[in-house]
Length: 613
Image (tube, rainbow, N blue to C red; front, side, top):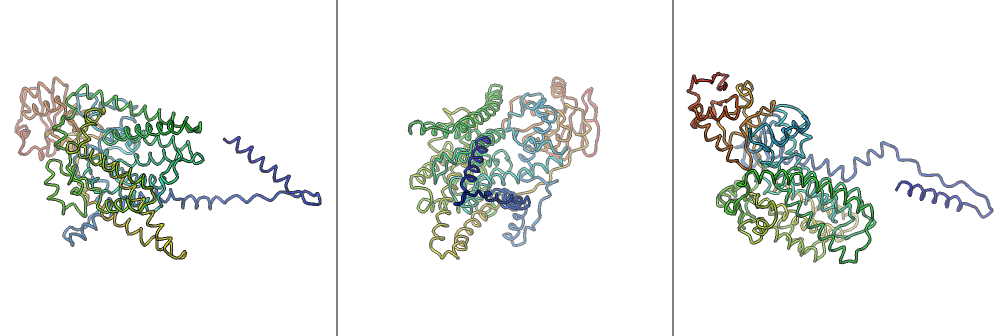
């Protein structure tokens, strides 16, 4: 490519020299080339570039929406009853402190494993003596580079809080990039980004960083569309093909899959369906020639994406073979399936609707927050308007509407007609717990419909006013729509103080077990374990293996002979009893035991350490 540009440049200059002969036969020097742009001007131009501003704006908006504004907005709504306090990002963790702590541990463990040459990556320090404990959760391995920064509990909490904010930033940027590539204007891009990043249903997954991490999906789709020179408004344009963007799109898609299959598995199948559709269209149109570099880019990028997907699929398949019960029964899926009215109900962490929809969530039954699928009433209205006024063609709008309806019916799980087909015939879906997470895909389609409406509305405002007032008219009719979407998407997030690691745990000899051990407390123990990552029995995952539950059950009688036999059989050297957490539980009896053969008791602070000889 560089050689061809150079030859073309020389050819142009040669023609210029031959064309400057005057009528008298004299030859004059060619016109001077324009001076090079000063470095400072190039820097200013780069800082003002749309994508620079979009990236910075996404981050700043995420900080404001998830951390700074909600306390003051909540205080305003509560009329001063709930004083505004901004969470300490180094000592409080966003969310309920349960699943969030376990997710923070995941990122820390990934970084720890990379730092030590990936030794024991899948086994982890938790879930001892079981193997492949990492595959019991979405791995979040794509965030491992962040796990390389800092050590200990404080660093783990701060790292998680930063990633939480950046997750919303990437979701906004990905939505913005996608609709801009499809042909929407900038404000419409911002509306789509806001609708995707701050959709109320997302706050039902505040403790699930793996489910909130959706920005890589829309960003990869935008890059792939740009790389292939395709948009909704222009169709395919060969001259706009950019193979480098295609490769980048495949790499971002692979990174998204590396975060886990919670949202990654449907994305894999959606990409496969898109590739199949594109191949069929290419054949139907008589196999028009494709740029060679684009074909090679797709082969290289697709190979990386396939390899990453296969790597994680193999790990999760191994878990399915070890623990057949990890597959979800149809009745189990039914307990977590939303109902049609779920589309009008917001989770409790939604600031505008959380309190108002309490009764609606209660009616949803078990796991009500994950069944609350409100995409946003503002988004519904904008998408509805997009069916009648839009820059997308009528055919495109009908296809978007059909896709939205199909996506909603699938997200309803057992209460819809289509999810059973996925559960029965598509590999991987029989291990999914919550069909409602598929609401992501209707949200994307609704955002595209809304972006088409906002772009057409801006064009209509521009055409209906005088040229000197057109820019103002566009802002007047479109910016309030963006503000409305953002206002409805404001969260009311909790920032929980995590308890300090007990000194007894720091003194314990690994392998160890901390009591009590249950799904509610083990996530905190996992967070504590990021200070050195001692091997331990404790661990909480999306699936509780029979072996681990058996250990928990036996340890309720600790230090009975049966429990001590189990500990010695597994080589467990220490048991830590956290005094203020065992009150009222069967584990509390251990506090009254002073002496046991082969067991040494230590009072360390408020807690008790039992050393197993």
